[in-house]
Image 1 (cartoon, rainbow, N blue to C red):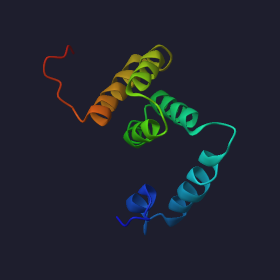
Image 2: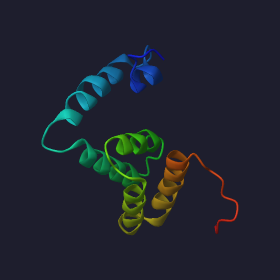
Image 3: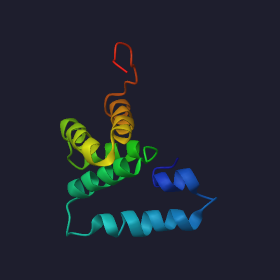
Image 4: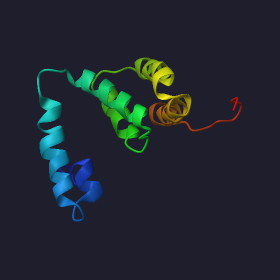
Amino acid sequence: MTAHESSAQQLLGGFADKLVSLTDDVLFADVWERPELAARDRSLLTIAALVAGGNTEQLPFHLSLGQRNGLTKAEIVEAITHLAFYTGWPRAMSAITTARTTLTGSDDTDGERR
């Protein structure tokens, strides 16, 4: 990956160039930059939407982005815990497992209740 290559370009460049362009130019360069919501709020909403939809594949990127945008680990954990009651326990458990791996670098489950 070169210094100017986006995550979308790295993942899909040369295969789905239009989707890369829409991701980079519309979603992140336009929608995410609109002043009506702070980047922190957009991150929290995006994380909530990904948890609600059970979309854990994109969650690591957005968890990290959320931290860069000012969310704390405690706030992210609390948001996912809160969402368990509205999105379902399995989605929240999958999301919190992804969050633990992403935010702490640990996926060790020894000693945890299952």
